[in-house]
Image (tube, rainbow, N blue to C red):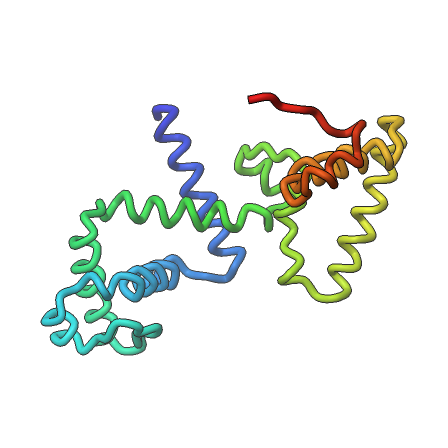
Length: 197
């Protein structure tokens, strides 16, 4: 088996494993993907096509309980994917890859080894910590961990808090200096330069 085929096979096995771990069947995954694609692309269908399928723009839920409802969703999916000029095979590959990427964090170290995945721990950038979605207790924990980690890193680097803070002050002053008048700037003679033009 070629290396590319081996990689594709391993990726597909990982996808099935994550589905199983989440308690989702492959069929349910497919129906969910079709549903979401159709709902987000209804506006691309002509009005006559939408009338034929009794669909309105802004529809959020398409029923999929009966055989006829599933058949209708399949037809809508084929129409919308054809309009979007997306390869059916490539689209499913993208969806599987996205699903795997979105769920990799749930794997244990042992499970990563099973699928020959290398995992390295990296710190989140501070703006990636979405404090809006956290509870009050979780936000407090983020602040606590931030302070503890800062103290540890200051100790390891031999730096002081002021070493971090003073450059921020300077940047703030420089970025907002246009708010000052010339006479106000003159009062801070050690902090200004003159530009001649």
